[in-house]
Amino acid sequence: MRGMVKYVLAGLLVFLGAAAGCGIPAAAPEKDPDGKTVVVATIFPLADIARNIGGERAEVITLLPAGTSPHTFEPTPRQMEQVSGADVIVQVGAGLDDWVEKLTGLVDNDAVRVKVTDGMVLRQTVHRCAGETQTGYEHLHVHGKQRQVREHDPEPGHGHGHEYGDPHVWLDPVLVRDEITPRICQALCTAAPADAAYFAANLESFQAELTVLHEELAARVERFENRHFVTYHSAWGYFADRYGLVEVATVEEAPGKEPSPGWIATVVELARAHGAGAIFAEPQFSTKAAEVIANEYGGRVLILDPLGGESVPGRDSYLRLMRYNVNILEEGLRR
Image (tube, rainbow, N blue to C red; front, side, top):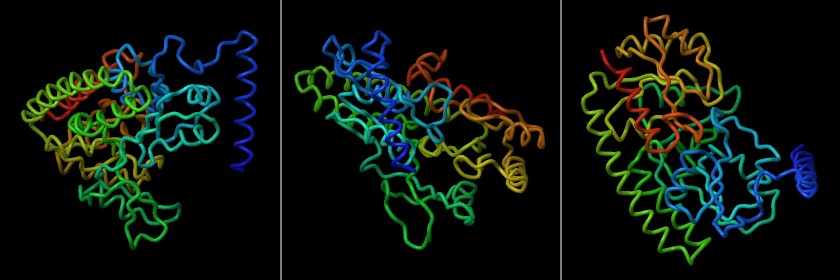
């Protein structure tokens, strides 16, 4: 089946190339005509970070459309064409956006590739195979216990479970400043060494902005009346760890899995026990289950956004996205 998919996608790429020759514009040029470094990023926050570092000497493309979850996204021939013209490919890694590897495996280019989680110490998540118990996963996210692991670091004793470190590293501005921006800058410098000094200066400037952001968020969160919260899926662990919050439960039992009635009852109980006035859903997922839970204990549903997008008002840059989220958290964590 995988081989068939590969040949079908390859054929579509040939068709797209032929169509472009007939006057139908391709999704991206093979190389930027202005001599800019072409950067393709899987998600918008990474794209915006790359744009801040690349400045006027980089052309940055986001693969994941706004409002789409990277956990369930399936790439299209358009994304394949975009990847084929890249000088730098930036992804999260840790199992979040491995779908980009379907594309890079079908195109022939010499792009510099960077997984921003490579070498980082990550929070633990455990994804079980179908039919296996979810106990380990639920225990992790309900009780907030974690083990620090590196990406793809195996843990013995879990049978056929699939373990990844928590990939949502970009939701911690300090990790962005200290870990992610240097990795992206290094990739840009490797792809375009003549612009290395320019990229390095932009890196320093953006890191200073991230320091201001971090200090602002820390001061805001310090004043929160309630520090326990419920989210739709476990994206906010790094943010919670950084700023002293506690994610007591997630609506989703595991990524991509609809909550069972038993799990919904558990989340309701936890929300009541911790005085969670709001459940934080996300625009990439249906709010139906979150609304059911909120109605059960008299709470409300607010929307956090881990991804944002170029065309999303108020969330069209990494800095604005994070300020939007702390505003929503502040509203929801009032007693």
